[in-house]
Image 1: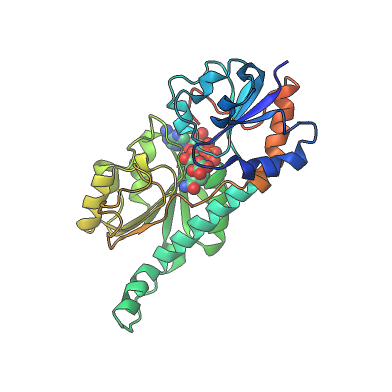
Image 2: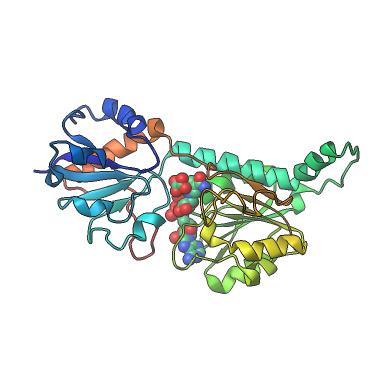
Length: 319
Ligand code: NDP
Ligand code: OXD
């Protein structure tokens, strides 16, 4: 029976994950049964022994080297790069990361960015640089309309943390939601109405063919004048050129972007120095190996017992 793990991440060294998994998977021999791709190619390992791949942004084609995979476990929430790989082994279940620390850290990021724009700290930052001592009008939180695209694990938690401030909160998702105090919009038919009532827009959608470019010239212009955009979903969900136009013509007052079409952003991109854009390098929430290890171990055991793992990706919806 194949029973070895392979770790595949071109970006993230294996040690962090191995160190976190060793104590929670005492039944696994990490010396003989934990391989790191592609280094293992130079060892005596047999790819047929591998039953589970632990991956973060594997390169297209990486997974096809393992003929006996029972499951692929993604070490992050978004599975877009994996599903874009046409060589993904057909029929092999894909598990995504749902982890309390990942969720918590995303909510911190969202709350910080929403308050930053709502309380005009971006303007006060500039005023300090200009030695400009003035009071700006303080808008009432109870009148401020926040809209979240994506009411899944992360969006729902962000709503929970934003609600106590008193914002008027709405969410947009594929299916209708019933969350106390949150107006639910769903499906493309309701998108225009959702955007029209949103002063601060947060994008926490997965990247799928349906959400690719969903924020474009038409939809951005449906936001009220002076709206703010926060994107920590995926860069390709916003048409970057269209966003720059709307920022430059003043329709959008500011944007906080954590994800981009090309990462890292090219050194000469206008995004870096745009006065209305706050850039972070895809750090809104980073996977924590320490926190996630228990859930991953549980899923490894479930898979090896022949049970359905938790947090399966639906190949039909793409998330
Ligand atoms: P979930 O799968 O839990 O939730 C996805 C939400 O998006 C659901 O509410 C779903 O609707 C909605 N949705 C999906 N497709 C559509 C559509 N076509 N139209 C309307 N709504 C849609 O995902 P998570 O909350 O766990 O994560 C969301 C994304 O956040 C990840 O896919 C990843 O891209 C990004 N992310 C970014 C990080 C960063 O550091 N920047 C870190 C972690 C994640 P429904 O509920 O009806 O199914
Ligand atoms: C994720 C991410 O999807 O880090 O987990 O973007």
